[in-house]
Image (cartoon, rainbow, N blue to C red):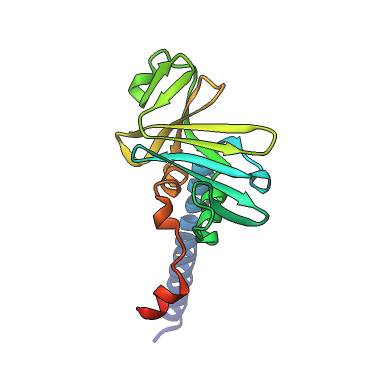
Length: 193
């Protein structure tokens, strides 16, 4: 091989290496940019100090469930002897800490299209109500319809706020459980299985 061919081959290998490196750097740059843009689209619309939550009442499939805190233990308010899975209840409560919205509909005239009905005492939601007791105050969360374009997102309103928020369904899905589903299996029943 001639000296000029060797130099050309080395130059081609270097150029190819630079192209491959440029591809990966560019790919990472655009992935980071996309993540930043997605994060910028969401806005925190409600922060709840979950360390102060003393109880939660919520509706699911037309029935109301109430969970209270006795000391550090979450209990079924209607049946305090029922032992609840503390981790699962803790996850439910934690989902309320930082509620983010992808879209904010400011003071809409027609809230029915989002799954809400105006009633004398405020708002009646289509899907679910979540009442969070913080000892000296209560946060009321109303879950309307799911988004027709993204079934895992729901329209949400808060008591005293006329805006409608499109939030990720994580908050809502955490409260799609009966207390029987949250009941801790007894050690004797688990041992028999």
